[in-house]
Each structure stands twice: as structure tokens, then as C-alpha cells.
Image: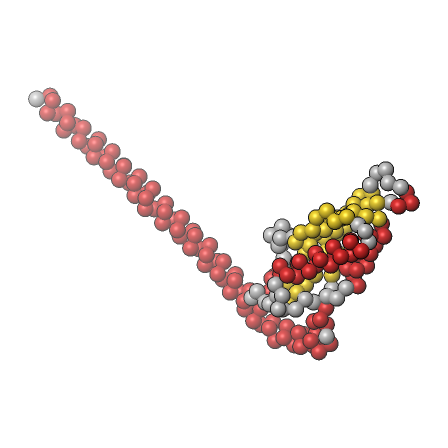
Length: 199
């Protein structure tokens, strides 16, 4: 008789345990995934609104940008930049070749020359991201006389298309003849090409 009463007394406890397990299963497999999906969708919607706002700003500025481009084209200023027919890789390669030619002409030693990835550069401004003119940066390491550094900088600022020196690091080499001081130089130079608007 007592054996029959024990299962009967345990039935409410078992029922509550089953109900608790059911609630936990609903929370873990229903509520939490739904909440995470809702958060993800909210972030996507917010990101979409931000992109839409940027596109509206670009659309509002389009007439002014077109007028400025027409003015630049009439003055021939657009010839200061690499043409739209080239790719960023081609522009970077030509920039590397220009510096390598100066180093070779001055009997210097070129150690490395690489295009700096856009991801490694500081975040571009919104104006650059939507501009028709896109930036390409090359970092070059070379060694030679101080005249070589002067020649590289002169060639950069005197060239067409325009080249800009972003940074220069100069290390004098020890033990060199003071009359022929050798330096190791790391220089970052940039130029612009008509890459087309990213908007």
C-alpha cells in the first residue's frame, strides 16, 4: 500500500521538474535566439539608415561636385592625377617604378617598395570615400647619399601626376665617410587617381 503512495506523492514534483525543463528549453531554443535575431535586425536597420543618410548627402552635393569637376577639367587640373582608365594596382606599380628609377639613377640601394594597404592606413574621411579621386600610398626603403634623398623628394614634388610625401624617416649609417654620408631612408609617398565615386 505504501509503495503505491510514493509514486503518487512524487507525481507533482516530477510534473514541476518537467515544466521547468520545458520552460528552460523554450528560453534557450526560442526566446534567446529570437532576441539575438531582433538585435541583429535592429543593427542592420540602423546601419541602413546611416548609409541612406550618406547617400542623400552625396546626392544633394552632386550638382556642386559636377560644377567643380567641370571647372577643373576646363583648367586642365585633372591632368595632375592618374587617369580613370588605370587601376589602383597600376597606379601603385607606376609610383614604385618612379621612385626605383630615381634611386637607380643616383646609385642608391632599394631595399623594399610596397603599396600600403588601405586597411592599414588611418580611416579615410567620408569625403574621400565618396570622392572621384582615390588615394594610393607607397612605402619605400632605400639607402644612399644624402643627395639621393633630396632627389627623391624633389622628383616627388615636381612630378606630374602629383605626388605627396606623407612621411620620411632618415637614419645616418655609422662608420661612413663624413664626406660621403650614407643614410637609410623610409619614405611614404601618395598620389591620387580618378578611381570613380564609391557612392
